[in-house]
Image: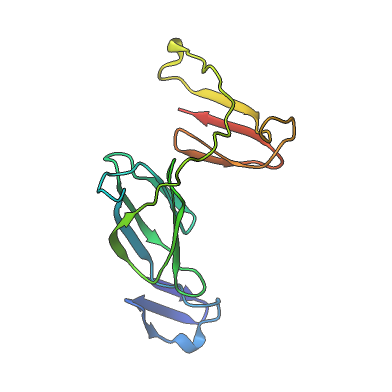
Length: 171
């Protein structure tokens, strides 16, 4: 990585600085990037489809089930990367990593979680195949008309809401 400041050129390779770092005036030197990958499994080794978040990036471990990879992740100020894994029917798994990892993560089943979703009948629109579809709505507190803020996910697009309106466009 080469930075050209108004005072000279600074080169960073494998965390080593060359050039004239005494003239660097543009804040802290950028940290090394981290790659994380691996598998997400049940206790008996079955792959789990989950959402993996780290350093503002996300991926899904669904194709094939259980396999994930995120590359080029920036570190936090304390030189770590926080990895968060969420899967339906399992407790969240949050780990603080100190560097590049490639490991198997075993998730713990959450047991009998209550159903927070009111039963509904999904719409079926076969003529819309291959077309863009607008999705919108309001997220309400269970069995009330009180709007809440939540994260929504549609076709790989994440949308957060303030206060509670959801709008997503899926390809």
